[in-house]
Amino acid sequence: MTTITVNGNRHDVDAASDTPLLWVLRDHLGLTGTKFGCGAALCGACTVHLDGEPVRSCSLPLDAVGSRRITTIEGLSADRTHPVQTAWIEEQVPQCGYCQPGMIMAAAALLAEVKRPSDADIDSAVTNICRCGTYARVRKAIHAAAERM
Amino acid sequence: MPRISWKRGFVAAVALSVLAAIAARAQTPPAKPPSDAALFLRIAPVLQHPRCMNCHTRADYPRQGDDQHRHIMNIRRGSDGHGAAAMRCMTCHGRSNNGASGVPGADEDWHLAPLSMGWEGLGVGDICRNLTDPTKNGGRTGRQIVDHLQTQLVRWAWSPGQTPQGPLRTSPPLSHTDFVAAAQAWIAAGASCP
Image (tube, rainbow over all chains, first blue to last red; front, top):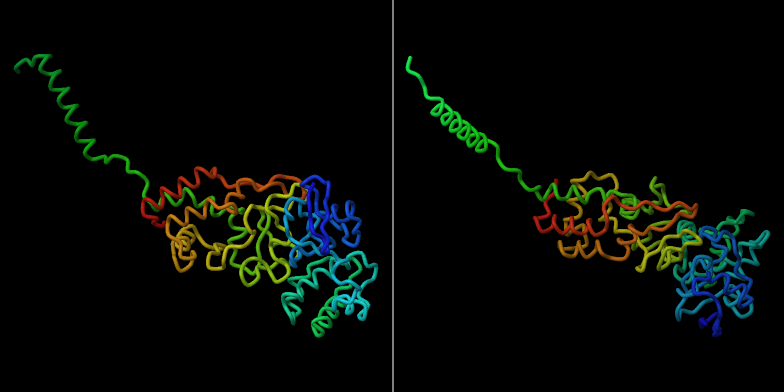
C-alpha cells in the first residue's frame, strides 16, 4: 500500500510500485481529468504537478512520488478560476479538448515560474501536442493569463 | 696455407654470433610503455560515444540516439543545463530507465553538461584539453574527474535501457570498469593530451 497526497488529500493506493502515476490517478482514484495520449512522455496530455513542478505522469512510477504533493487538473483551482483556466475560457482555446488538461497544467507551471513568458519561453515550456492545432489560442491565452497573475 | 682447427673455427663463429647479438640489442631499444598522451586515446572512444556526446553538446539542446539527432519536442538546454522553465529534464526523465515508455533515467538529476564542457565538433586532442582545463571542466582536479566518471549519470551509459521503439541503446566500447581504470592510469601518468 502506498500513500500519496493528491490535490491536498491523502490516499492509500493498492497498486504495484511501478504503476505509472497516470493510471493510479485515473483508475484507482477516479481522477480522469488527466489524459493518456502516448505513454511515452511525448505529448504532455498526462501532465500533472509534483510539488508544483510539471511531470509527465505516464512515465512516472508510483514509487517515485514519495512525499511530494500531486496536483491534477481537478485540483488546479477549487472552482475553475485559476487565471489560466479563465483565460482558456475567454480565448475559447479548446477544440476537442482532449489535450487541454495537460496543456493547462503545463501553462500553469510555466506562469508559476516565469511571470511574463516570451513566445520563446512558451515554445520551450509548453511542448504539449494538440492534434486540433489550437496552438495560437494557447499562446494567446497564456499571455492573457500572465497579465492577470 | 696453415690448417685451421675446426674446433677453433667453431668457437670463433660462436663468439662472433654473440658479439653480433649484443650489438644488435644495443641498437634496438626495449619497448616503451605508452605515453600518458597515448593513454588518453584509450578513453577517447568512450567520450566520443553518443551516450556521452548527446549530453556534452555545444548547442542549446541535447541530442538523442546513436545518430545523435536533435532531441525531439523542442527540448532546450535552459539557463542551467537542466531544461527550460517548466520543461525541465526531470519533467520526463526519472530516476531509472522507464521500460514502458522507453524514457531513459538515472538515479541522479538528468541534465546536460555545461556549455563549457561541450565536446561536439572537437577532435580528440581538443576534448582532452577541454577535460583537463579547470576553467572549462568546472574546476575539477584529476581525482574529481574520475569521481565524475563514477556518478550515476555517467554510469547510465552502460545501462542505457531500450528506446521507445524497442531496441536496446548501445553502450560505449569499454566496460565501465576498464574505462575508469584507463582514466585513472592516464591521470596518474600526468594527464597529457595527444
